[in-house]
Amino acid sequence: ILNVEQSPQSLHVQEGDSTNFTCSFPSSNFYALHWYRWETAKSPEALFVMTLNGDEKKKGRISATLNTKEGYSYLYIKGSQPEDSATYLCAPDRGAGGFKTIFGAGTRLFVKA
Amino acid sequence: NAGVTQTPKFRILKIGQSMTLQCAQDMNHNYMYWYRQDPGMGLKLIYYSVGAGITDKGEVPNGYNVSRSTTEDFPLRLELAAPSQTSVYFCASSYSSGRGDTQYFGPGTRLTVL
Image: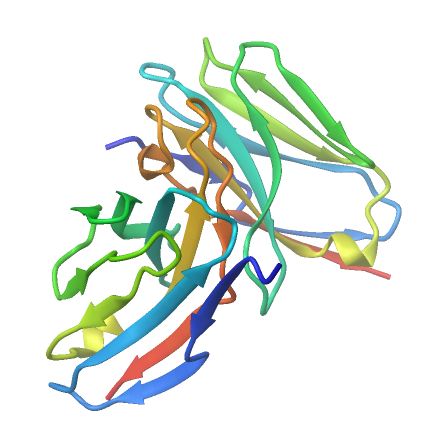
């Protein structure tokens, strides 16, 4: 079983604050890593997928980095806005195929205006 | 293009009843999945399918059954519902690209078993 740990479990920030979350996973049998964004009452939506050590991805104010050797990924949000309020899921793959994806419990972000 | 659709959105069952959760996708994805999501836990894979006629168990298959007769549809059957099956159920699909398949999720079905 691949253990995925995300920290913190929840985070409250003020509008304009920059923040970051951590995802840690066993570095053995790494295949790919996904970040999903999950708004309340909606379904998860893909943010990034990364496959190589040192990968960095960026989408607007959100970016992510990947370290496969030590088994962690960071997600950064610059200048948080209320619409960034959501749960951010980290999901490493332990092989090819979505059935090899293991989802973390997520970090829940609350951004206060 | 509707993506992944699920019905019903909400359902209350009595212990011992059965029901089928419907899932359909119109993206011609070969892979489809059923997950359950319990408070404080990550999404847990119940069953998955890699193509029409091919299904396999995930992490938490007990109490459920699936079938996949077409590329588009992947229903989940609950037999003899139990309170432990109270959860939110998500269907998802993906196209097998070889590495890092992005999954597309349906809106979910909230099931309560009393």
